[in-house]
Amino acid sequence: QCIVLALSTLCAAAVFDFEADGGAEAGDDTWDTVISNGAKLNSSLSKLREGDVFVVPTKTFHLMGGIHARNLHGVTISIDGTLSFASTALNSGRYMKAWPRGSDGGVLDCLTFSNLSRVNFTSASRGELDGGGAKWWGLPGIGYLRRQEDRPRLLTVLESDDILVERLHFRQSPYWTFLASGVTHLEVRYSRVDNRRTHADRHDLLDLTAFNTDGFDLAHCDTVWIHHCEVWNQDDCFDVKDGTNNVIIEHVNASGFGLTIGSIASDVRNITFRHARMVRTVKGIYMKFRGPGSVRDVLYEDRSRGGRLLSQHGRESHRAAECE
Image (cartoon, rainbow, N blue to C red; front, side, top):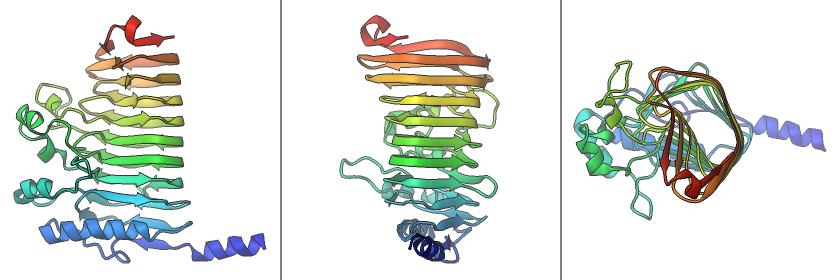
């Protein structure tokens, strides 16, 4: 009976191509196609069943964000091409105004996945998620005053277990790049974050106006391994937030605000940062506290740097946190 059930599940599994099966249109950033591709991605993801493989082929698909997939189990999402959250340059203002918003009025993230188990986000080479961040950042200095943090994250995974993220290139995120919240047994490997205004190999005042573009953020997570990844951004590179425990971050490149804990107002425990290379980074080790909490059993090991090593932000440490 078990063998028959396994064979039945195997036979039911399918490869679902975003273009061929989902009806998405590649290489077209005009308004109607962007709206249509966003709706088709939502629809395509909702049809996946255990064992299925969803493939974004090696082409560029422009689309509207606010995608939310729920309750996926035992599936693979292979981004072999590019998902670009943008329309034409002339449509930039219209695009941001039309961006989906939640019941609280805030923008929805580009991609949100919730209640997943045994899901792999992968690529046959190095797939790309392009957030088109420049339009959200706006004019240097002025853009932040206008939008502040009302900008979408690029990829968010919520309340999930046994998740693999690999071989993905995240670029131009409007806000935080990758957020895992309430996730257990997460591995992120061989992936890259690149959030910058220019191609210059430095963090000058112009580049730093692409603010809040965190790299990999972890909140209320347990048992996480991030390795062989690189981040160039204008905020926290690898960030352990509230209620997160049992994390190893190793063999990484970080240039931005470095290896961060915070901001927190809770307990964080058993965190290891090791084999980290930080070239031209603004900060190296960065801890932020916004209220009472504790940071215990944290190890920083074998790091090379080219910026400030240790920075602490928030209330005075003896009032805000207990560090061991």
